[in-house]
Length: 180
Image 1 (tube, rainbow, N blue to C red):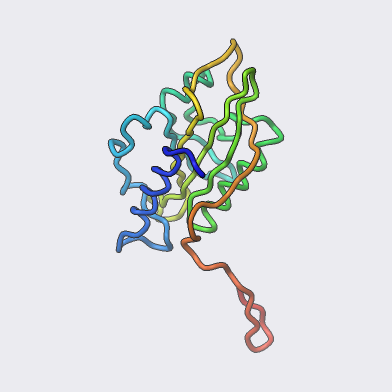
Image 2 (cartoon, rainbow, N blue to C red; image 1 turned 120 degrees about the horizontal axis):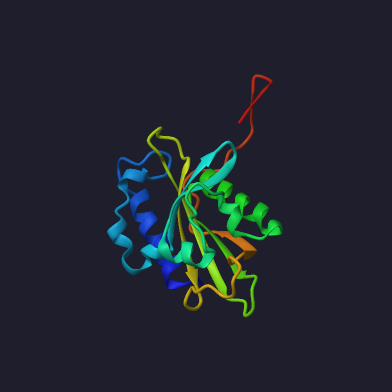
């Protein structure tokens, strides 16, 4: 069972993805309205896929306070411990390929450790390609900075939420040629 804020983002994204003008199951970034997030907005972030890396383009004030730095222009993986970075990038790739939100269950590396969820959902940018991401951090308790060092996150599990927005690719052999 997901955190209520995680469920909110999944439901909001799903409603956007069901609109008639949506292509390939992924809504456009322009369909988002920040006011829809209400009290969650300080924990929301936007990211863009560039050269195989997920770069933050916008981060809420609560995230920047916990990380003790401006996050725009930084890789999403900078928020995570090095062993967690690969799982986070795999979750982003899964969200884009499957056209659905993916939730990463995690905890903070400091003491006391705090449980949280990060949900990422794909969006289409101005190029009409699925290269943008909407994200939200949903902590089990208040998201606060502990100690003097920036908070680092440890990923435990990533799971897709809902049904994939696209059918899985399958290999077909036609006249002796393999076609995906």
